[in-house]
Amino acid sequence: MQRIPIHDGLFTDAGALLGARCPDCERWHFPADADCPYCSGERCQTAALSDRGTLCLFTGVNNRPPGYLGEVPFGFGVVELPEGLRLIARLTEADPTKLRAGMAMRLVIVPLHVDDEGREVVSYAFAPDEVA
Image (cartoon, rainbow, N blue to C red; front, side, top):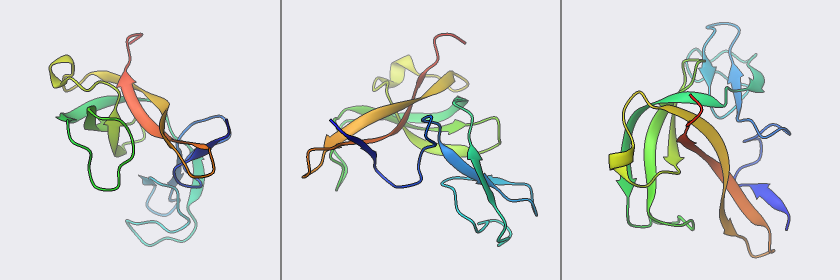
C-alpha cells in the first residue's frame, strides 16, 4: 500500500520531520517555510529536525475531534526538541498515568487512515523513548 504524508513537505525522504531555520534571527520553526514567522526573514533554510525530545505537557483524548479520522483514544502533548522548538503532537501513549513531564520521547510515523484512493495517510507522533 502506498503511504503519503498528511501534508506535503512534512518529512524528509529518511522520515525525519522537516523544519526550517532562519539565518537572520537564528530561530527554528515547524512546519518548514521559506518565511520566518518570528522576524519575517525570507531566507529560511529547511533541515531535518531531531527525532528525540522531552515531553512538556500532555493529556489523553478519548473522543474523536471534528475532521480527525484516526483512532481514539490517543495522547496529546507538547514535546520540546533540542533545536528549542516545542511541537504540539499526538502521543502514542493514550494513558496519561503512564506519561510524565520531562519524559524522553522519540519520533514515530503513524498511520491515520486510508484515503479514497486506497493510500495510507501518515502523520507524526511521539512515543516514550524506552532507550533513554
